[in-house]
Image 1: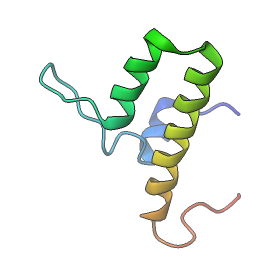
Image 2: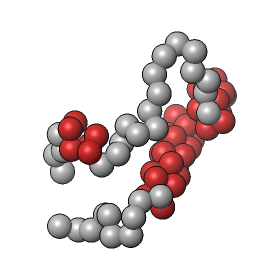
Image 3: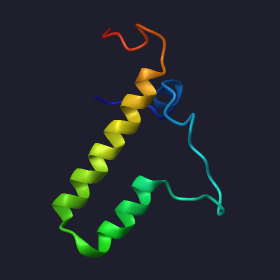
Length: 71
């Protein structure tokens, strides 16, 4: 599936995105940094994907009912 960056933005992908040099890492991000030094690439990727899925599911849960209908 191809999606433009504007369409991705319109889905709310960047609503909770912050930028700047003074940002703190989330607990999941801190764990990923730790994993860079002491785990296998497969374990790292598995954790990264699962933590991203959890963030997406929390986002979907906050949306109005029917917001994600197949079209």
